[in-house]
Length: 175
Image (cartoon, rainbow, N blue to C red; front, side, top):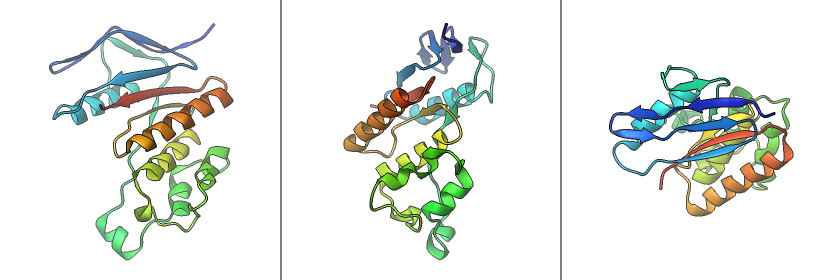
């Protein structure tokens, strides 16, 4: 029997309502949040609930999720001493997990490649793989990706859910 990781009786945030759902081990849930000025605040609210940082009376989180964070680098650091892929992985990934090196399957990405040289799609995939190296229970959005990158991200998710037992993804999308 599959374990329920998140049970929601409906989430209300300002003028928005996310209908009830249950998230079981190994399932993928897609929540469409249409673009607009409300998007970021609503996404961050859902992220905080699913990470277990805030409580919502209508949501039971039995297992916390990890968010695939945006890769940010200060302007000063970007100009003076840019972060490399190797440095990023050392700080943000579990290097003993096979996902930590999956980004190097993209032939032109090397350990010494600077983060500020990565376009949106590979940058998102670097963050995705580093998050997967630490947790099977993740949530992500597709901000900063073009349509081709979104398809690649979904292919990665599809492939990895087939390869790993009890893999979970909660996907937050903006259309």
